[in-house]
Image (cartoon, rainbow, N blue to C red; front, side):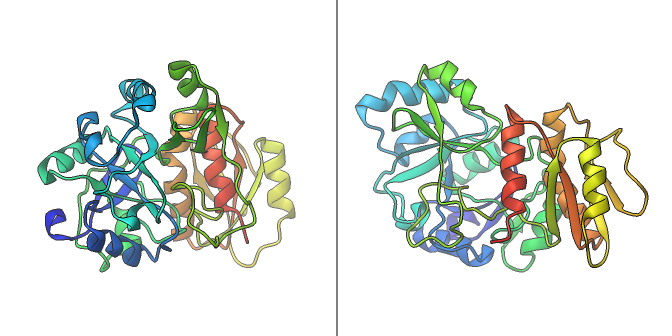
Length: 321
């Protein structure tokens, strides 16, 4: 199906991706139509191994050692590298930019698909543009049923937030999206400083293409209005008492936290277990949406490590502009 231009959703260790032949402009264009995704938002290309990198990227000699070091440390895994694209990559994949996002996923289902298809697969998250990311096949069906040809159901994803996106072609290297691979880990491997990308925070429809996947200002959003609070039980209780809402109020509640009655509770995970918080974040948001809440309240975990990725997703989901 991929070889003939169809769209196939599949599991990675991060979230489910919506895949198409990355070397076919027509197939890639169908991704944007299925997701209602604007053409200015570039895609990530998935390959089976670092040996296939040359088929999608022309890495200059001065960057080879840096890229090899990052690949050896983090591929297969949840790291996307922005690298000079090869002539084989259509403009639609990169939104006309010179760099293409590339990663080698670790999920065995994704690996098997890439090997069987025998081609690189362009794949953003398998959801409608701007909506909460899918971490199960059921989430994919909820957004894309009737819009795509197939879903490979491999159960829930393990990490639950999208890959770290890094531009290693610059010094300092630029972190466009935080994920399970942290800036500290990247610097430890390369010895090179990592700086976080700072975009135009009020811009939801840019005049030019975005420089990287995952930097749109409003993403991951549930249907309900989302309100974020400082990560303490006291702050959460105060927010629930003060927030006006039309209809049902829901809360994404860490385990062992106590709140007053009268709200819809979606149990999250232990507050000190950021791996579990990340893995269940999007499914918790979708579960509250499915229960018909009009307002969704969620505490923000502390910064640092995977907490940065969780905060990034929540802050973008809660934006109203």
